[in-house]
Image 1 (cartoon, rainbow, N blue to C red):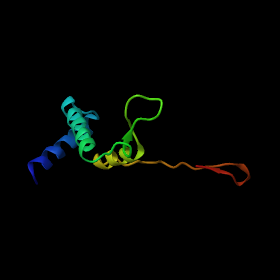
Image 2: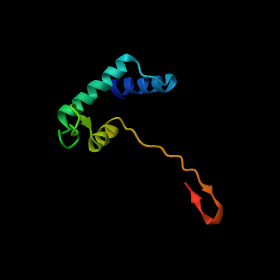
Image 3: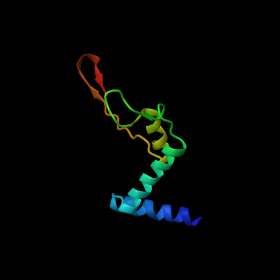
Image 4: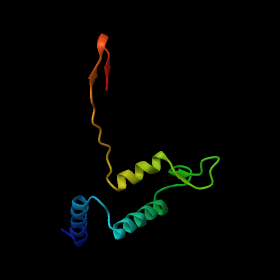
Length: 90
């Protein structure tokens, strides 16, 4: 296992234990976002200025790229509620 992989594994373990990121980790994540913006994300496709605003906004395709980068996955808990007359809520 490479040095980077070991450091990442130790970082992930410490984050899970503490539930928070250190300032150095936050800076590393911000740097990664800027790197992704500079090399992959395209203005008008992944981010852009929404009419009526004056600064760029992350758009859905850009959010999907960043979610992929940081390996974020949605987690859903589906609850079922049976109602009268055969109706059901989820």
